[in-house]
Length: 108
Image (cartoon, rainbow, N blue to C red):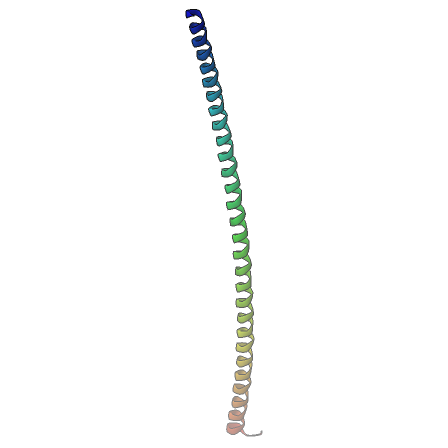
């Protein structure tokens, strides 16, 4: 009976060591899987952030180009208006000069 108890205890110890070994193996596997999942998520997050930055930069550039076009159009209209006003004032000044010359010197 003593041998049988001793054998049972040894079997239980072997089983306990097996369970502990399996447990350690599963822990190591879970750590590896967790690290891989974290690395995957970090990479996915980096990619998402880069994509967001690229899209944001593209949108900002498009808006900037729109603003530049509006400004350029506005400046062109102002330039045309000022040129027309200048031409008109110049013509008016020429007419006044001609009238003054005619008044002083006559038709001769």
